[in-house]
Length: 339
Length: 261
Image (cartoon, rainbow over all chains, first blue to last red; front, side, top):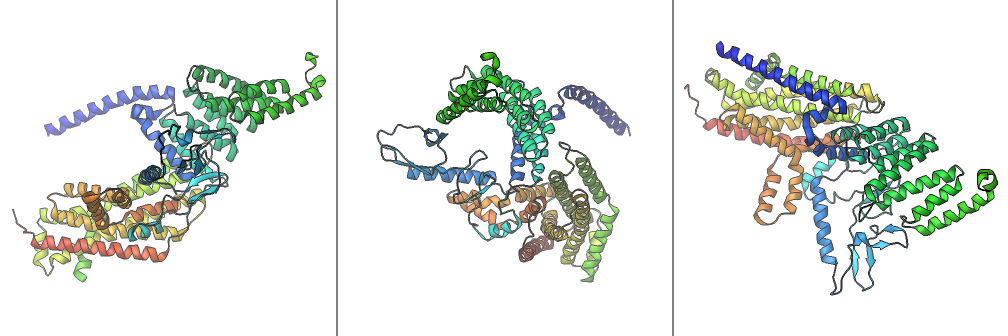
């Protein structure tokens, strides 16, 4: 009987002690708005990527390579590369994915085969990602311009695997017609678990504003991301896009993009390899916004700067010439102060 | 056969009196409804996460019910010494094994049916759709897979010294099969020599109940029905596997010396 009382008292003390500890922590958590931080600490970040991947799994309607498939693919790719890549004695070149093919303006990761001057040939096994956008290949499908690898399953190795495929998603489809909303809970959880993961906010805002016609929610989510990442030029860039394209507020969009340029300067300017693509995106959108508002001189100024970062400066030259012509045509009315 | 049904009936009545199922059902329902009360970006039509959470809880709950009920059947009879009067009647050890299995399996069927009705109701409330055939396939596969789990736990209850050991090991085995079972052949194909042979042997020997677990994706992503022939084949495969495990349990039980001490 005495033992039972002792255990009860011990449990009560433990309960009160734990409550006091958790309550204090929760109070701190309320300030940052993140309960996960209270319970998991920094360990929560490990799971953030899992939920972001989960969102991608949903977007692909469940047809997604497992870590085992990915490992097998990587191994196969390495083997194939080792077998087919013949190095010469003077072979002194950058890896295939870093070869700059400025003639068509993109870093070349989209070609299965390309020859070098010394006559040897690379064969790249390219893994499709959300960013790649090119023609059909074996084992890939394209939905809405988004290319994905669907050839990871291959032929079943045995009867069990063949049977198992009857109960799995084996057709690659993308969520469409508003069903993209199903990815949102996972993205929100990823943001809760790792508030410093900037990509979560920009990807979520993309889907909210472009595919689900929820620009207000996108703006709020990006603002939340900015509170957690005040130095992020990428979140500011996306926020500007929401203002420009979905909330029809070009003045605010431009203000946000100017702030993004300042953040880019703070974060990237001193680096050996700054994020040129990021700066180019901001400058391009900013210049286009000025152009759309009839402020051609400002537009020209930012397109000129974009040329320094763009992989296709010739195309921008054409645009600048066009804008200068327009500026001459509308100069007296648009900018009378200059004359 | 009547003896087996009588023994199974006792198991069902015992489970009816116990609180395990009710507690797990209420917990599953509460957690699902709690998850359902959350809204993301002011969009009430989002259901995928809710279906996923609910199906996961259903699997965990049914595994707990199946494993804990099956693992304690024979040890409880031995501990309370009711096994002696039971075997003194015209009841063989085979009858005990099959009767206990059947009772646990019927309980699992009731649990699976209740859980899928609840799942169907939750989804119908959110999605305004009731794909009955899908739920039927899911429930059949789930129930047949549980036959293997129950048979495994009954075998374990004879081999291992205590129900806690049996439940722990069975959970690890079942969890391993559900999460890694389908990938072992991929791993084996990247290995060499003895490790490849051993991994392949394990892959072919394991009961592939992960097929039933994987069926959740067809429900989650509103995919077409699986072929009924495949469902039937899987059911026959699991039935054969469960029968083999029960025969193993009977062989072990037959050699087991039951003492009063």
